[in-house]
Amino acid sequence: MSMILSLIIGVLGLYAFILTLSNIRYLSDLQSTIRLECSDELVSVLIPARNEEHTIGPCVRSLLEQNHTNLEILILDDGSDDDTANIVRTLCQEDGRVRLIPGKPLERGWRGKIFAMQQLYEASRGDYLLFTDADTVHNPDSVTYGLSLLKGHNASMLSGYPKQLTRNIGVELLVSAMLFNPTLYVPFRLQERLQFPMFAMAIGQYMFLSRSALNHMEGFSHIKSEICDDVLLARSCVKLREKQLFAPMSEALTCEMFPSFKEAFHGLERSINGVVKRGWISTILILAIVLVLIILAFSPFLPLYLALAGESLITIMPSLAGTLLFLAAWVINAKFFKFSFSSAFLAHITVFFVVLMYLHGLFLVLTGRGFDWKGRKIS
Image (tube, rainbow, N blue to C red; front, side, top):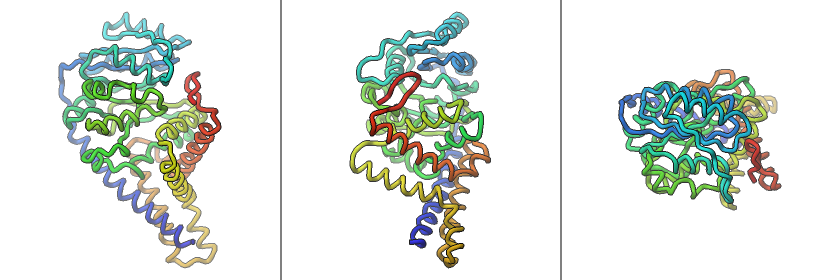
């Protein structure tokens, strides 16, 4: 049994390291192909906003400073009970490209944010649509960067991780869970060529789409009741044979997802459970993955335990090598995606929290308690 566990960790570590090297090389090559080109296409920047009085101002002002000037910036006030709408009205007076859209009452069967995005899509006029969150701040080339990638690779949808801002190591440990994808899950080079729905990735902080692709998907109505809108939109895109691209976005914008550990935990458990398919086969597969992640989370302790138990070097070495290779892979990805080294070297703790967030979220789903998002209950 000890040898089997040791070999599992060794194989996982080797796989993570090889996948990471492949992904970093691909993403670096992708960055090197970007040619920032000015264009005159109208881009609609679409922001769903619910109680965002502290973030909406900096977000919109950063978008008004874009080098791509042919913009319309539409902000949908999704039932805010703070000063969000008044701040946007002031911005509208300062620049005619900004428009405030009062949100309609939430219709039956829709999730709040997805319904807001549908209304923004219907109100927009651009041939290209950039959906972004109110807690993002964009560098001046953000729109040009995304549009150049989208057109340069003949893609219909583009998304990628912004540089994540965190206030403390606890929040960063949770937010860095997104490194799970490049370290253990998505083969990005293969994905661009073959476009598998299961590997389609997106993050709502930055989703750039052609209008024709979103028209093809008939807007957001097909995912109106889903929790994790971004990933499922990317999967829908691929299923309809619209090319979807995932690229590094840390040079284009920053985002502070969560101000506190508690908000990060509850926000991420909602996303993790929202992206998991339901059904017996999926449940068995996910539970197997959870078991593997538990083994990986505690892998640093296994070589020590085996040594103290008097196991041979042949038994100990695979687990030791696997642990170090996995940690190296995580650190490489953390550096590339601009996370701190302090959080990167605590990778195994992050993996443990990924398991914990999934299991706690699953408990909330199975007991019918559901999730809370900005004052709305999501069952």
